[in-house]
Length: 597
Ligand code: GDP
Image 1: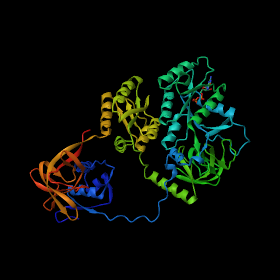
Image 2: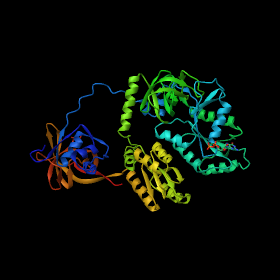
Image 3: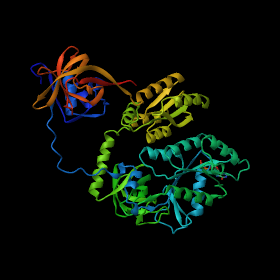
Image 4: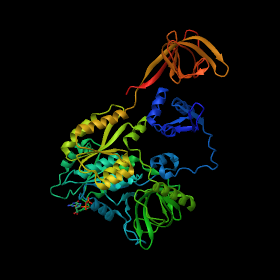
């Protein structure tokens, strides 16, 4: 539809994002943003603007705006957002303090291959699990609990930071404490560093288990020096990292390790509310030939009970049977307890979060909604530089997190040094993990979990890592020349640096008369002395050198016609938003905000 003047009519809703408006007008978002800036409005591409603003832009761009009839209000109230989409720490914070009770710590064991993670987990299980009666299932369920001084500790039985971060990438944070196993004869190795970075990125406290102290060539002091170089100073040297010498093989030092775990747990004040329906995370899922889908879950808040209906990721179910880590049937599982459950519609993935819902119908619909969402393509995490830019604009991000992979250690150092020098106090590059070798799935998981980008220098991305990154929207940038890498990140940062705006004066006018207009109130009849006055510019009213008003031009007329601008040497009428007390001789200064950086 067109008006008589040939202007195309566009129907604009009450609220619209800059991107949507650009699509509606068939122009690029940049043009819309430019037009908004000319009107003194700073908006990014995802920002929502109201009809009035959108209409001015549309009209300035030659369209005839019409307001869309508002949508009828929905009749039914939308159900509350599923709790599993809310971070756990927020959920704990929402609980009434009197409902919170201490809960056992959940521990993951990490470290370099062959340093003794599996042996340590087995040794702890053998020496500390109270022998129970033979239960209904006899296999390991992926987690177990031990008792020390009458208190429980939960161990996740899949060692390694890869599994830990893969779960984090799926939105789950199951671990409270990381035990970093380092073989005292071998010292800090590449995966030790990787494990440290992954635990740090998750802000999980670490305890170092210095393993294999029974070996002749074990050198504890050397390991401590290596740790100090990585910024982990052990307690006896004035640092904060607890270091416990152990021998998993000889089952030595295990008591001390458990005591230290309890100590760190006390410092973290781990609590949960057992008096509510359960929620938590799947640690393991498998298809049992005779029993059907089976999952090991970690209850993280509330108490899980037999017969509970639940939704877990995009599957649902009802707890038909529940077993503890010894295979004993149980009726209830309190916070931090790992249990194997039967009765799910399918096999969950490690890291799928679950919550108990009131009835089966709700469980089914929620699961179905999620399955549809997944089928329609996962919501991409906001990880590209462009999207991080939006977050920065919204004040959410102050650091560009980078995972840096290089071919040799020698080439990583200059890259790191240059990257860390970029930016300013408002926005810096922080390298959360650095290592040699190709870009792996573990790197991509860390990037997802931490909202980081991956930079590769003279390395390839493994095919599985690349396809995963593409699916999840993780940005991988690869370089072969150092200056190009630095230049790109610098450019990105400049785009990211919070924009700085300066007032640029457009023109000045002197008030010659004050008119009263019935609908509008008072407007100033002015003579433009310098530059020009624009409708939708910002304006100041200055009297005797003093600024009386700083706001927005509301109307600009030549005689009775609305106009876009009036140049020096002409008279016009100016109305201001929220100011009417004009006096003859006042100066009206029109200005716009211009981005200078
Ligand atoms: P993971 O890859 O970290 O899980 O390491 P494993 O637990 O599989 O152990 C690797 C090797 O180190 C095995 O041969 C273990 O028997 C051995 N090992 C583990 N802990 C100790 C220890 O405390 N002392 C000695 N001497 N050997 C150990």
